[in-house]
Image (cartoon, rainbow, N blue to C red; front, side, top):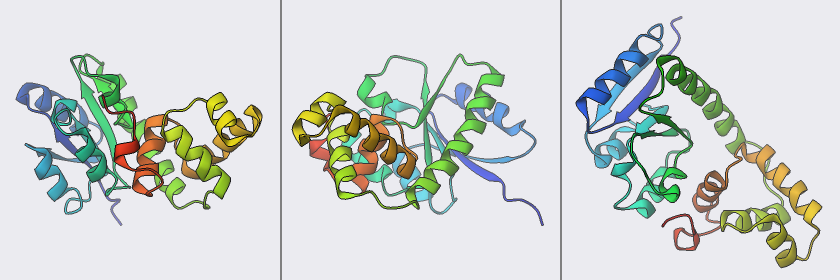
Length: 202
Protein backbone atom coordinates (compact mmCIF):
# COMPACT_ATOMS: atom_id res chain seq x y z
CA UNK A 1 0.00 0.00 0.00
CA UNK A 2 1.42 3.40 -1.02
CA UNK A 3 1.75 5.92 1.78
CA UNK A 4 -0.32 9.06 1.40
CA UNK A 5 1.68 12.05 0.23
CA UNK A 6 1.59 15.07 2.50
CA UNK A 7 -0.12 18.12 1.03
CA UNK A 8 1.43 21.57 1.27
CA UNK A 9 -0.30 24.74 0.16
CA UNK A 10 1.65 27.89 -0.75
CA UNK A 11 0.23 31.42 -0.85
CA UNK A 12 2.99 33.70 -2.12
CA UNK A 13 2.64 36.51 -4.69
CA UNK A 14 6.21 36.29 -6.01
CA UNK A 15 6.51 33.66 -8.75
CA UNK A 16 10.28 33.47 -8.30
CA UNK A 17 10.09 32.84 -4.56
CA UNK A 18 7.21 30.41 -4.94
CA UNK A 19 9.00 28.45 -7.66
CA UNK A 20 12.21 28.33 -5.64
CA UNK A 21 10.41 27.05 -2.54
CA UNK A 22 8.42 24.55 -4.61
CA UNK A 23 11.62 23.26 -6.20
CA UNK A 24 13.17 22.62 -2.78
CA UNK A 25 10.08 20.83 -1.47
CA UNK A 26 9.58 18.69 -4.58
CA UNK A 27 13.12 17.33 -4.25
CA UNK A 28 12.38 15.82 -0.84
CA UNK A 29 11.97 12.23 -2.05
CA UNK A 30 8.59 12.90 -3.64
CA UNK A 31 6.95 13.01 -0.22
CA UNK A 32 4.95 16.16 -0.80
CA UNK A 33 2.21 17.27 -3.15
CA UNK A 34 2.14 21.04 -3.63
CA UNK A 35 -0.75 23.40 -4.30
CA UNK A 36 -0.29 27.06 -5.16
CA UNK A 37 -3.00 29.53 -4.22
CA UNK A 38 -3.49 33.08 -5.46
CA UNK A 39 -5.71 34.50 -2.69
CA UNK A 40 -6.75 33.78 0.88
CA UNK A 41 -10.29 33.19 -0.36
CA UNK A 42 -8.97 30.41 -2.57
CA UNK A 43 -7.16 28.95 0.45
CA UNK A 44 -10.34 28.84 2.54
CA UNK A 45 -12.25 27.22 -0.31
CA UNK A 46 -9.57 24.59 -1.00
CA UNK A 47 -8.04 23.51 2.33
CA UNK A 48 -10.59 20.78 2.99
CA UNK A 49 -10.93 19.77 -0.67
CA UNK A 50 -7.19 19.16 -1.05
CA UNK A 51 -6.72 17.87 2.51
CA UNK A 52 -3.94 20.40 3.15
CA UNK A 53 -1.57 19.52 6.00
CA UNK A 54 0.68 22.59 5.98
CA UNK A 55 0.02 26.06 4.61
CA UNK A 56 2.93 28.39 3.85
CA UNK A 57 1.64 31.95 3.64
CA UNK A 58 3.18 35.34 3.02
CA UNK A 59 1.85 37.36 6.02
CA UNK A 60 1.07 40.31 3.74
CA UNK A 61 -2.16 38.46 2.89
CA UNK A 62 -3.18 38.64 6.56
CA UNK A 63 -2.39 42.27 7.44
CA UNK A 64 -5.65 43.76 6.15
CA UNK A 65 -7.87 41.44 8.23
CA UNK A 66 -6.02 39.59 11.01
CA UNK A 67 -9.22 39.00 12.98
CA UNK A 68 -10.82 37.33 9.99
CA UNK A 69 -7.71 35.22 9.53
CA UNK A 70 -7.89 34.02 13.14
CA UNK A 71 -11.57 33.14 12.81
CA UNK A 72 -11.07 31.22 9.57
CA UNK A 73 -7.88 29.58 10.78
CA UNK A 74 -9.62 28.10 13.81
CA UNK A 75 -11.96 26.21 11.48
CA UNK A 76 -9.03 24.11 10.26
CA UNK A 77 -7.59 22.51 13.40
CA UNK A 78 -5.43 19.97 11.57
CA UNK A 79 -3.55 22.52 9.45
CA UNK A 80 -0.08 23.75 10.48
CA UNK A 81 0.48 27.40 9.51
CA UNK A 82 3.90 28.66 8.41
CA UNK A 83 4.64 32.31 7.68
CA UNK A 84 7.02 33.03 4.79
CA UNK A 85 9.03 36.08 5.84
CA UNK A 86 11.26 38.36 3.78
CA UNK A 87 10.29 41.77 5.12
CA UNK A 88 9.36 43.23 8.49
CA UNK A 89 5.97 42.35 9.96
CA UNK A 90 4.50 43.42 13.29
CA UNK A 91 4.96 40.83 16.01
CA UNK A 92 1.20 40.44 16.36
CA UNK A 93 1.01 39.27 12.75
CA UNK A 94 3.99 36.92 12.95
CA UNK A 95 2.53 35.38 16.14
CA UNK A 96 -0.53 34.24 14.20
CA UNK A 97 1.58 31.48 12.63
CA UNK A 98 2.74 28.20 14.16
CA UNK A 99 6.22 28.62 12.65
CA UNK A 100 7.98 30.57 9.93
CA UNK A 101 10.50 30.30 7.10
CA UNK A 102 12.87 33.15 6.26
CA UNK A 103 13.33 33.72 2.54
CA UNK A 104 17.13 33.60 2.99
CA UNK A 105 17.07 30.25 4.85
CA UNK A 106 19.24 27.54 3.34
CA UNK A 107 17.76 24.50 1.60
CA UNK A 108 18.75 22.35 4.57
CA UNK A 109 17.09 24.74 7.03
CA UNK A 110 13.87 24.80 5.00
CA UNK A 111 13.81 21.00 4.83
CA UNK A 112 14.34 20.84 8.60
CA UNK A 113 11.54 23.36 9.27
CA UNK A 114 9.09 21.47 7.06
CA UNK A 115 9.92 18.09 8.58
CA UNK A 116 9.70 19.51 12.10
CA UNK A 117 6.38 21.14 11.20
CA UNK A 118 4.86 17.78 10.29
CA UNK A 119 5.99 16.40 13.64
CA UNK A 120 4.55 19.40 15.48
CA UNK A 121 1.34 19.14 13.45
CA UNK A 122 0.88 15.54 14.60
CA UNK A 123 1.48 16.64 18.18
CA UNK A 124 -0.99 19.49 17.73
CA UNK A 125 -3.70 17.10 16.50
CA UNK A 126 -3.03 14.70 19.38
CA UNK A 127 -3.28 17.61 21.76
CA UNK A 128 -6.71 18.51 20.40
CA UNK A 129 -7.89 14.97 21.11
CA UNK A 130 -6.33 14.85 24.58
CA UNK A 131 -8.04 15.01 27.94
CA UNK A 132 -10.17 18.01 28.77
CA UNK A 133 -8.84 20.99 30.68
CA UNK A 134 -10.05 21.41 34.26
CA UNK A 135 -12.09 24.49 35.20
CA UNK A 136 -9.06 26.07 36.90
CA UNK A 137 -6.87 25.30 33.86
CA UNK A 138 -9.50 27.01 31.70
CA UNK A 139 -9.29 30.07 33.98
CA UNK A 140 -5.51 30.14 33.62
CA UNK A 141 -5.72 29.55 29.86
CA UNK A 142 -8.07 32.51 29.46
CA UNK A 143 -5.64 34.77 31.29
CA UNK A 144 -2.65 33.46 29.31
CA UNK A 145 -4.50 34.01 26.04
CA UNK A 146 -5.26 37.57 27.11
CA UNK A 147 -1.55 38.20 27.54
CA UNK A 148 -1.23 38.27 31.34
CA UNK A 149 2.02 37.25 33.02
CA UNK A 150 2.19 34.37 35.49
CA UNK A 151 2.37 36.84 38.38
CA UNK A 152 -0.66 38.78 37.11
CA UNK A 153 -2.60 35.53 36.73
CA UNK A 154 -1.65 34.44 40.25
CA UNK A 155 -2.79 37.79 41.68
CA UNK A 156 -6.03 37.85 39.69
CA UNK A 157 -7.02 34.26 40.54
CA UNK A 158 -5.70 34.48 44.11
CA UNK A 159 -3.42 31.47 43.70
CA UNK A 160 0.34 31.07 44.04
CA UNK A 161 2.81 31.76 41.26
CA UNK A 162 3.95 28.12 41.37
CA UNK A 163 0.35 26.92 41.00
CA UNK A 164 0.00 29.03 37.85
CA UNK A 165 3.21 27.51 36.46
CA UNK A 166 1.89 24.03 37.24
CA UNK A 167 -1.42 24.75 35.51
CA UNK A 168 0.41 26.13 32.47
CA UNK A 169 2.49 22.96 32.21
CA UNK A 170 -0.72 20.90 32.32
CA UNK A 171 -2.32 23.11 29.66
CA UNK A 172 0.69 22.66 27.37
CA UNK A 173 0.70 18.91 27.97
CA UNK A 174 -3.02 18.57 27.22
CA UNK A 175 -3.20 20.89 24.23
CA UNK A 176 0.27 20.41 22.77
CA UNK A 177 0.56 24.20 22.45
CA UNK A 178 3.34 26.25 24.07
CA UNK A 179 3.15 29.75 22.62
CA UNK A 180 0.86 32.50 23.90
CA UNK A 181 -0.37 33.16 20.36
CA UNK A 182 -1.12 29.47 19.82
CA UNK A 183 -3.01 29.28 23.12
CA UNK A 184 -4.96 32.39 22.13
CA UNK A 185 -6.06 30.75 18.88
CA UNK A 186 -6.99 27.61 20.83
CA UNK A 187 -8.97 29.72 23.32
CA UNK A 188 -10.79 31.56 20.52
CA UNK A 189 -11.61 28.36 18.62
CA UNK A 190 -13.01 26.81 21.80
CA UNK A 191 -14.97 29.98 22.66
CA UNK A 192 -13.00 30.56 25.88
CA UNK A 193 -12.29 34.12 24.73
CA UNK A 194 -13.52 36.13 21.75
CA UNK A 195 -11.49 37.67 18.95
CA UNK A 196 -12.35 41.10 20.40
CA UNK A 197 -10.70 40.10 23.68
CA UNK A 198 -7.44 39.03 22.04
CA UNK A 199 -4.71 41.69 22.46
CA UNK A 200 -2.27 40.15 19.97
CA UNK A 201 -3.58 42.08 16.97
CA UNK A 202 -1.86 45.45 16.53
